Amino acid sequence: MSIENSFLRSLGLQFYQGQCPPLLLSFNKDKKVGPPSLAHLTPEQYLEYSYISKELFDNYFKFAFVRNPWARAVSIYKYFKYHRILSFEGFMKYRFPKLWEERYDFVRPQVDFLYDAHGKQQVDFIGKFEKLKEDFEFVRNNVSHPLEDLLHINKPPRPHNWYSRWNRRFIYAELRQRPHLIKHLNLFSPVWSNYRDYYSPEALQIVEEHYRKDIDLLKYKF
Image (cartoon, rainbow, N blue to C red; front, top):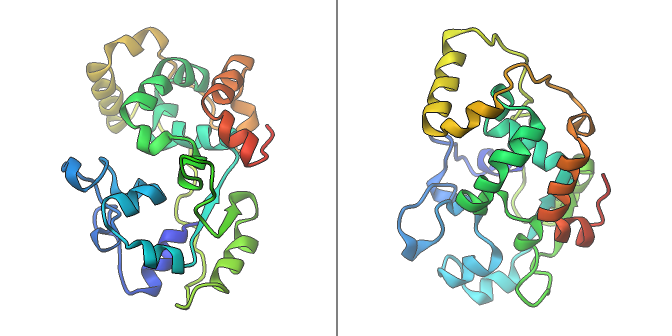
């Protein structure tokens, strides 16, 4: 389901090559205007970079949707397509720590988008992915602009042909950029529908260490 897509369709906008500049859903190279991805601004950054005034920020209805941190880690694994080259445990041990450094705005704890540095909640409503339709209806009833229905946009990846030319190109490009991963290569990792099936005790611990604030404040369990 895509909440962003619902808002875009309702406003007569559309993604362009995966981004939408009118709503700040774009990449950025100018540090003066924000982090590398303007799609991942925290509430404090919206104010810091003057994308919204304090008066408007206080008057708007603000909401966010969160998800189970262990499910989110599996989603990140698939989003970056590492399920095509590494086992999930290999990804969490050898690639995720690098993403934490290189793409922190993307993988950072969800509570960073909900609370300020003093622990004060910055949004009016926190919905959960696990009850998306129900919580989205609450949002629809609290915004002034009518919203389109949710559509299923980001469907999970299907098993693919490991030996296809397209897949070999992906593997070659990844190993050329990160040759150390060849020691952990695992091309035949299964694609499960339940996130729990991906976890070993070590992978569980890595998620707990990185997303402890999410687990505690958002009341999530594995």
